[in-house]
Length: 245
Length: 284
Image 1 (tube, rainbow over the protein chains, first blue to last red):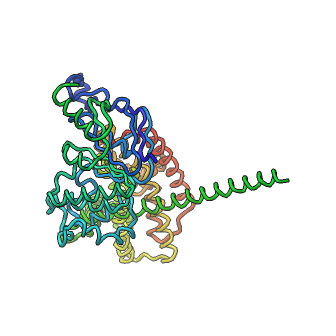
Image 2: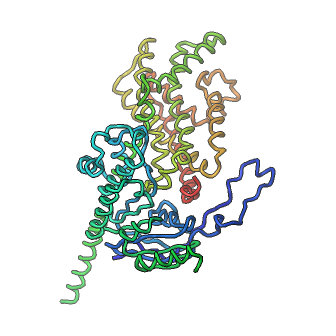
Image 3: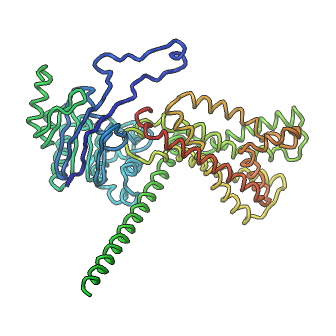
């Protein structure tokens, strides 16, 4: 069963810088050259993910990996092509999105859980499990601004895994946790895919990615240049980095 | 006739399935709606908590601001300008709090996308919930202020039928949410495209404050200009609240005018939202 199907997706940003009255009078122009000024962020991307599979996305900075995740989640819309989704999608695209620094860990669990689509009753039911998973203990009643980034990541991930999503999208954020928590996360994610969950991860940490994901795709300058098992894709990525295409 | 039997059976199954499917969809919509309401509640709670968590007087500040301004205008107009009016303090006060709800919601709600980038870009939620949470949050402030208004009304010897007042207040709360929400959505969406909107809205509301009969009664306006003041939708909002707080029966004409403007605002907001909302996430 295909959980996510991406067909011929094109995406561009209106990357003209916002023109204010000053530019309007002076006649400012957007620079359109250079590596990071892109006409197309994603060009004709097609792939699909089956239930129970794990997909790693790699590529250099600015090749559209995060944009792709945003499209999969549905916060951005495609310019052309289609994305078909199935089931409930949970995402951790940024550390601390949906968290407020002045609220306690406890209050943030409720807010973030609700943002992930949980009902308040449901959050009450799994609340203790979330705190256990995060191993934050008494710190759960401290405001989030006193947390280290590792602690926030623990909390965010603990909420995410209890939201019972069919598909998980994770962008780069697990790297801030310490070794034992990272091990715990990857243990959990392995179990999750074994039980039929679907996982999509973007990362530059190739080792972790290789351990976490079976399949992979490699993006280069907005195009999908390689897809297959993680080994093959990582190999291609190394060749791209070395300047051989 | 076996064939017809099969056919009927098939149609019955089809009908059954589509009914089941319809039920499924209905249950799904109900779940999504309840979930969204809970999210709204948590977002409002967050804002209220965050705003007052580290202040000593907490929610009292929400009341203090309109109260202080009411006092200043009372001083300026009653004391210095010598406006001839009975119960002028009540007159200002009953308009000040609904005005604060309206202006605060729209001015702050205009930034509800641009100031919440991570909620717009990184998580998936129904987008209208952000401006709506601004409106509801200011409504909560307003509700806190209602007893204060009644205290003043009581002190100056006003009276009314408590049952009628309660349901009229309920009606007006509902109408004002419908009145303010589309305006907030319009501001929020436009501000994503042109950030100047937030400044325009700020100035607009300072002007509207004096263009609306809030600190002066409509009767003081020269008769030939009154028609313009009557076409101001906010006038009807304020006037309705004054009537309700005074314990009088809300005239049907007021409610009708409010509903008319609500429809106009809503249609405009829906039009803007449908045209412009798809790019919000990438432009904030």
